[in-house]
Amino acid sequence: KAGAIRQTVSQIWNKEGIFRIGRIFMYRDEKAFIECQKIFREFENENSDIQRKISSSRGVVLDEHILE
Image (cartoon, rainbow, N blue to C red; front, side, top):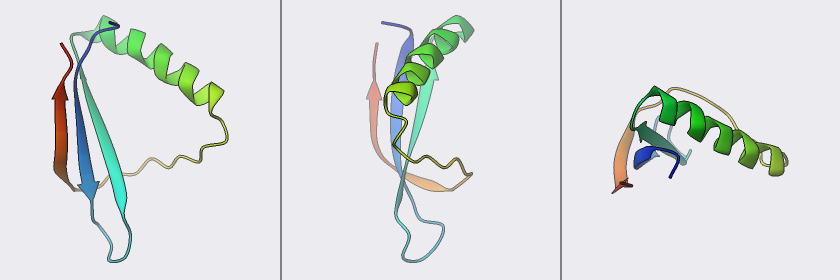
């Protein structure tokens, strides 16, 4: 409802023995991006015990959903 139109889930495999999942979101426009960031920040605040690490990686798309 906030304007996200697609979510892509990727399996990331930069190092042997390390398994990661990456998520990429696409938005209708800049306003939708800003509105969705508010939702993500709210989730992060409610789940502050979840450890997150941001890194650049190569991945293989496992699943993709068009959300519109």
